[in-house]
Image 1 (cartoon, rainbow, N blue to C red):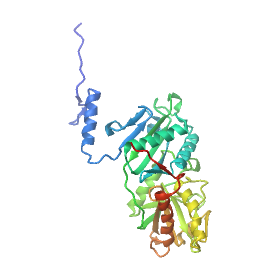
Image 2 (cartoon, helix red, strand yellow; image 1 turned 60 degrees about the vertical axis):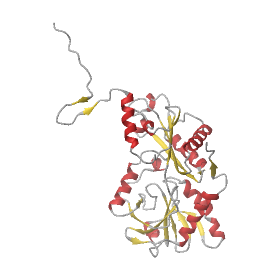
Image 3 (cartoon, rainbow, N blue to C red; image 1 turned 90 degrees about the vertical axis):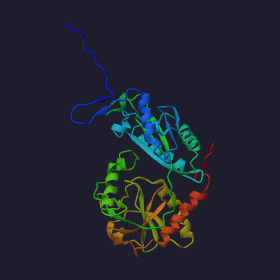
Image 4 (cartoon, one colour; image 1 turned 30 degrees about the vertical axis):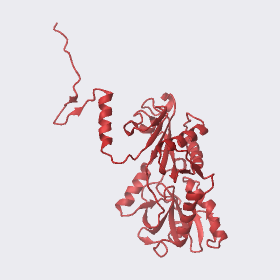
Length: 344
């Protein structure tokens, strides 16, 4: 019998054709490659990340990764939420964090930390990032473990968060929307903020293909539901602020805050009333004004829907007054809405 054939791992493997797959021989070689990728980026878009897998805050963008066997990656078993960083404050962190934990409960995901610790991590992460304006996004996952459907093989859940350098300003220009042909999520999934956003993505792509900014979902009964990642609101011809019921859609934190602030305009005699109710497509398209409501907007005027003008086809006066209410709340609202970040 001859000597056994000795084999070595080549840095490249060729199976067929001219394409050769590179094999990274060490973690240091891989890390060098990742650093090369990020070295061409002029401005780091993600100043800081937290990972419970690492057990701390990461400042090196090349290391801002999550395991491939995390069930959030390959099974969509995860939830997320966000908060605005504005002028050195975290806006509405607590209400978003409460919704975050409600979503996790619905998704049968436990947290590796109590709420107070999650909150502390997010504030510390923002402080370390030194970012004064942007967004803070965070996730709870069933965690890494295997590639099965059940999360029983995941030793513990995972918590991730990242600070995103994102510029935004008050929206004063109107946009066009379409009625989405993409089926909306069932109420169980629509009312929890989970990572399964493929319907939302397809809905936006559909709108962009038709030259619109976004879309509107109509529920199976024929009532107005929501936008792909925002709530929608209307000013009726009688100057009523109306939002659809939140029973089967996500209860947006910004929409909730707008409903709390809008009665100020009723007191001033500018609005007649503020309410939530079912709206048919015909009623909605007959509104005097229409708008998206969401965290980074906070209000985005809608001037046309399915190529039909809303009202006179111009940005509505009441829409901008509502936008001012939310914008002023972001700038100088009560301490219950704005957390001062202790930057280091």
